[in-house]
Image (cartoon, rainbow, N blue to C red; front, side, top):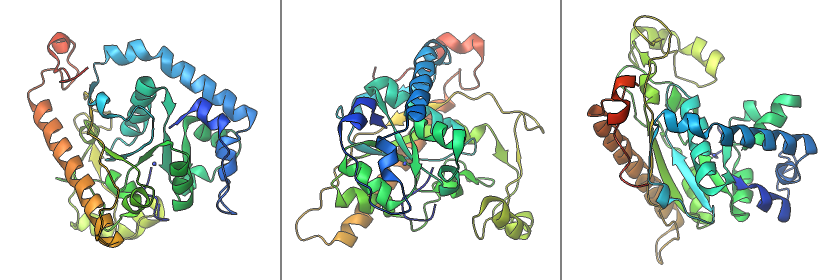
Length: 311
């Protein structure tokens, strides 16, 4: 999932059926996101029925979740998170937890290659909440007051090299902040720790392997100037390391522009404030995890697992 700046974020199921959705671009079928085909609605019902049925397994896994009280009850907010090497952990966990708490479907701004699929794959992605990661799509979702999820680092945040665990590869991307400012949309930073420890890179950025693999990397993952990380999981294998996941939602950030502050200045301020809050969250969660006896999912430590400070 990606930043809505053209380079590369839920919604209440009843709200989407009650409110009109205006198409804003010829090549982005925004109307389809709300006036969904019956097969997409059927997929959605199935997906959320399965999600609800998995609640006992979720509780058994003791996933650390903190800050649920920070989620605006009206569902109108932009979740800004960090991608990890595991990729799927944050993409699945964040929407699931928000749905469980508020009963809404999170709209995730997804890679255009992903949302450009057809047939059953497209139906399933739309049912789960994935939308094209375009500014027009995100803007219309904000006009409709939806819950949106974005990872400003996009694919770069997932391509971690040695020593880059839980760092944000946002570079100059600020599209999410500009849209939030334009629509006075609250931003909720959400950090996840655990995903960058499932696999670890054994090569460094700008090292011999990374620089020599950049051309190949661009063909494989589509990101210019980034090589291919070599990772390992359990021992020297690609078996995922057992890791507990730690998730925290920070208090919502207001984005209304103060008087006599230019738009560009305020967009930069909002972006940096969101980044600072997310980096602080990741640091706090790593510190918490360091003393958690259940961090490696050792069943003998299940009852001594660190508990969230709230709820």
